[in-house]
Image (tube, rainbow, N blue to C red):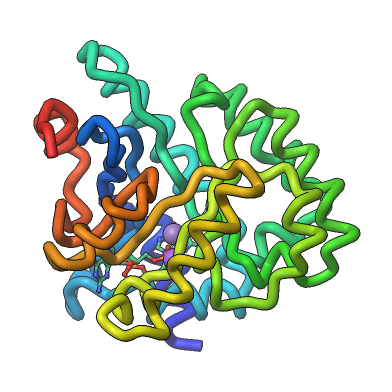
Length: 253
Ligand code: G
Ligand code: G
Ligand code: MN
Ligand code: NA
């Protein structure tokens, strides 16, 4: 209960901040996307990691408000970046299963886009595999409503859930995000086999694929050899402050 009250207070008190981690095209080496990641700068406890407060926000329903704040904050940052004539890039936002389960999610997102001026084509929503595969028949309609707004959809933590391949094919999704646990395990035969399987699947379903959690030269080398489209991880950059994004976007990786 204490954490819940503190989090409620934090949201009203500008204690939440966003960081952005780049997503790099393996073809061009350019930054083509940024993943927005929320942080809680607690006045006494310092940085509270999202793994500690997102579950509290989900349990208490605060995640709805938090998630909408993230979209608005991304819109605010994009409006600023747009004044700087930077190369084109997309921003990915994590959507909790609690948010995804709202019947009116698409109209809420549509409203935020309209109010904030954020172009839908700039935005990608990351939904976890388990969120979209739970009650898949219902979710097809919700995913279609979201897609109809003109944004992109990615399946986060792919490989950790239980995907029905027939639904995966019917869902209007754009990108699979290979879970970072499989990238960490790339040095084992099993890990590499799973990554290969996900790459083959995305190729046959004509989906984009991104590897996250890349930390080493070896992991990168493996993924480049297998023509993984997009790359993300500490090897390239940790999540950075919004102020540092313009410089990062001019970098070639
Ligand atoms: O940034 P970090 O790797 O510490 O994030 C830990 C977890 O918190 C990840 O599972 C990530 O998806 C989640 N997370 C980070 N930012 C957000 C956010 O804005 N919304 C939601 N729902 N989850 C987030
Ligand atoms: O669940 P999701 O994929 O949204 O989680 C992303 C989380 O992974 C963020 O908390 C981000 O800070 C973290 N992350 C990003 N790159 C790396 C990496 O290379 N290594 C590790 N250990 N974590 C990473
Ligand atoms: Mn994510
Ligand atoms: Na993930």
